[in-house]
Length: 207
Image 1: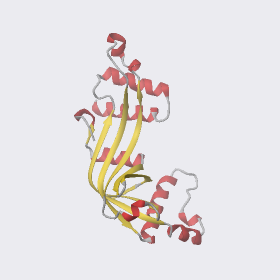
Image 2: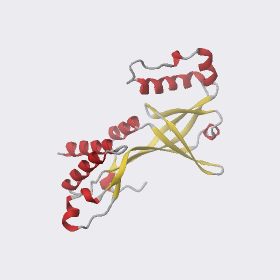
Image 3: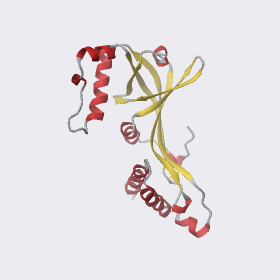
Image 4: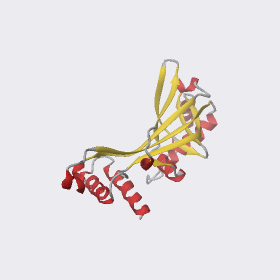
């Protein structure tokens, strides 16, 4: 991944936080017919990412293959009108701010119903935690659960390398970054508030 020094994020806790907050990822692997991409929600467990796929998914036949797992956080178009410097010199252009984490590792296929059930429990417990009455797997009839477990297979990616790129206007002066934060909050499209919050948090941690 092309990542200029000013946009490169190497802090493990920051990268893990993004993965936990935005767990739906793209899994890229070299298949017989070329590159294959699948889209899955992951849970981070120790030094590995865990998920599950349908038994017919091509990943099931790729045990041991090197994979790239791409997580994307907040992103959005940045208007030069938000930069105070644009109104002084006109020498600014649009750009796109975004946050991504790339996890490189090796795929392990886990055809074990007990393992898959634990993975499903971890996934649903995580995402149901904010509900007034969280749904659990035990809410479903056991015969239905057993049938579904037979149709899916677990996958695990042991993390070998992780890289992050947080392009958040670090190449601009503070007043331009403040203008971008204000502009995102005012526009308030999908992800704008989250992107502004991430930029603001970075400003506060640097001060």
